[in-house]
Length: 162
Image (tube, rainbow, N blue to C red):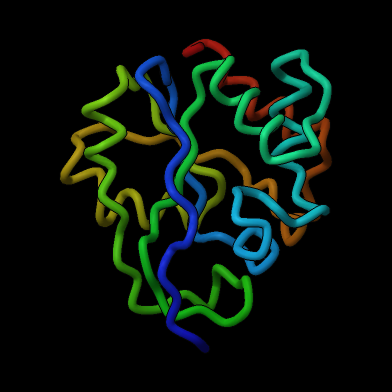
C-alpha cells in the first residue's frame, strides 16, 4: 500500500454538460498523466464509438474529443492508500471537491465509471452536491465480463444528456 495524491487535474470547461467520474487513476494513468491511460481500458474505445468518432490516441486528441462533446472528466478520490491500481484495496479515501466543475459548467448529469466510483460518490459527494449519479459498468480491464459491445449498450445513456 502507498498513500497517493491525485496527480491529474479535472478536464472540463464552461460548455461541459455531463461529468464522468472514475475512482482514482491507475498506475498507467498516473504515468500518462491523463485519464484511462491503461491500453486495455475500454473507456476511449467505448465513448468514441458512442460519439461516432475515431478512437483518440494522444492526450490532446482525447481532451479535444471530450471538450467537443461537452464531457467533463475527473475522479471521486483526491487521495487514498492504494495497492498498485486496485480499487478493492483503496483505504483512507478523501473525496475530490467537485464544486469548481459544478460552478463553472451546467452539468446535467453525473455518471460513475464503476462501482467503486459510484459508492464513493454516494458516500462523500452526493450529500454535498445533491445530484444523484448513475452507476455505469467499469471500463477497466479488470471488468472482463463486459465486452465493448455490452459496455456501449449500457454507456449509451450518456448520449441523452449531450
